[in-house]
Image (cartoon, rainbow, N blue to C red):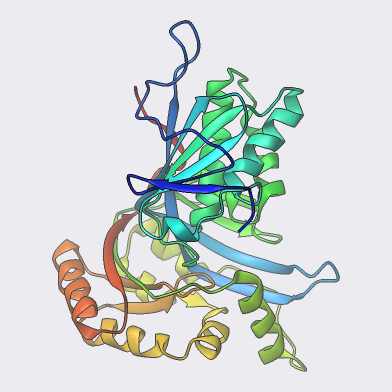
Length: 332
């Protein structure tokens, strides 16, 4: 990790000479703008179809995103320079330098408007870090929206989405939320209707998996084969539209599951523990190593989460519902 000195105080990491984190809505001076807090959701890929590697190294995708009710919060406060702090589970694994997508979001937005990115960004983590649930992407989208409001820029939504796409393939969906089909490398979104609530359990593994490494393993496993063009499943889209949990369970698919299991074989035991406990379906979330379990209802979610925790195959298990709203400014 780069970015100068690092301090730990009251469980909060700071870097680069940053200030201590600020609470909701009290930053700034008496005559200046106050802090802006944005809540942004995690995601699960209910379908992730992956095409062959392109000449630029990316892959064409048919990526059906569903936002879930696990959230990070990003607070933006006026400062003399760009600084980042972080607290929450696995905060020690979050970079606090310019490689953090929240910091990059502030820099890109400021550059578009010809201003200095002078802001303190505080990230309150609750989305698993490096877990295939777009936690870093969520922080980028959250910081982008928070800085836009803090600086009074009123950037058009289409331009915010362009900046999101520049930040990373999953960042646009973190801004939008709900449900959407991502094509291209996942950044071109078509919002999708969802006809009901879905209940999930997420098993958080020890350690993370690098998304580029998982895609590299996909390329290795599919070398010499005819990789089909990725396309969204009509049955899955219909299950989302009607809110049919059973139909959705039968349509879940992730082309990165095999490479994730190849790199982390122990995930197979986690998947088995969840299905044995009554989950309707199980899959690796995105590039992993978090595993996702679709369940019938809230009571079933509690049962499956307890069984996963007791199984010893994961670090912890979290329950959540979907769909969830995208990046949202919280009231003072």
